Image (cartoon, rainbow, N blue to C red; front, side, top):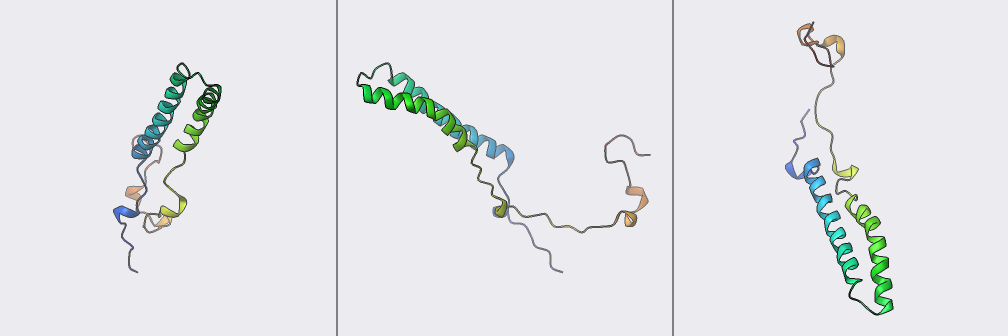
Length: 104
């Protein structure tokens, strides 16, 4: 049986990179919200004030939605290769407790 090799391009994004990407998206959206709130001080037309006020209210929700849309989809992840071995076939020297501590 030929083993399928994993390619770097087929691996999902690391959790650290994904978190960084979400933080950047969220920060940009919150920066735009801050600009909308600051612009409310200088705009005098009522329709601009309403548009900026609605944007300032909706942007936090929109920022969370945009930031949490991940790039990792279930179709892009592949399971690691390996061979399943029955428990009774494992050599006795490698049997250790799973939860840590010293081996018995």
